[in-house]
Length: 275
Image (cartoon, rainbow, N blue to C red; front, top):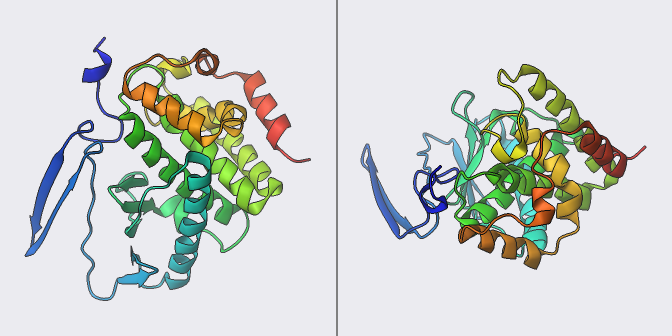
């Protein structure tokens, strides 16, 4: 087992440090710096594919102007909610429609890469719109948490990276769109968990030892929803600061790090699913 300080950074190629970089591609040059975990992404628009929407450069298919406007609106609303729940929200200066097969959505050094699903192929209202809002809020919250904690892949890291961030995504939809919207997304998350557990080719262990991109992405937010809903921003950020120094998870958190529990999911549905 590696010491916590030498474990792999979560969603970054290297942990927090004083980083500088220079990228030169086809006559374009970009230089930047950061003291956060090392993670950045850039895209160069072609033709008229990029538009400026309220100081955010949006790079998307030219036929998706209306969707781009809706995504920009969702970003603004969810950023405000994340700031209320965590005390701050990360800056976003670029937003790209991330092509199918290029990987999952993420926020990299101010560039929000939104995958085709669930961000672009959705209706302008209803469950699809709610799911996109939750997705955006989760990405924003995850960036705040990862930067503040300099999180490494140590036991239980999925709880903070997936559980807390995912729960904030769900709660923000409840804050902005109401309990019926939250209820619909909680039910969808439970259905996705059932599918993920069914197709997982490995024995199902605990959230403490869960691997990346597995059932934990669906279970952790549901298991954490009650806990996160009851925490003020100061408490959540204190916990991330403790994670940065390698302190163990609090006892109340360790109770959430067991194997997927039918009782836990049933309680989340009972608590958060409107009749």
